[in-house]
Amino acid sequence: MKGFKAFLLRGNVVDLAVAVVIGAAFTAVVSTFAVGFITPLIALLFGQHSFGGFSFTVNGVLFSFGPFINSVVTFVMVAAIVYFLIVLPVNMLIERSRKAEPPDPSIRKCPECLSDIPTAARRCRYCGQPVAA
Image (cartoon, rainbow, N blue to C red):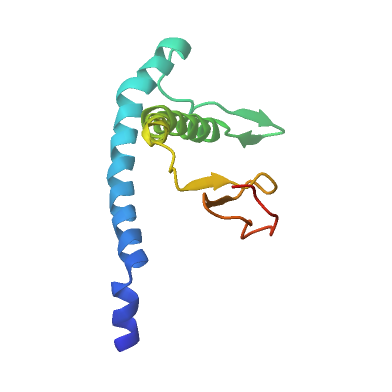
């Protein structure tokens, strides 16, 4: 029981549980956005809300490719929504915060291997090359 308790209280298990809950809530938001805004745009372009009825018959065998097209369109819509509304803005914020950080004056680059080394170092700790002060 002690090992099970340690497993449950480990940080990454709790993080994973939080991620699943947040992911489920976010899925509902994205799905609602897709149904409320993107699907009507598809209806404007193609004249119908769903591709579910698309099919063809060969030698009496029905091939219903409409549900597959619906799934592909839904996947592309969700991926585009996540990318443009979440990933792109977060990446821009991260990039902006990186530019705001001033370089550390106590660290410089090794001219040989380009590793970060202390400014006062006379030899690179990674490649062993002598470095001018």
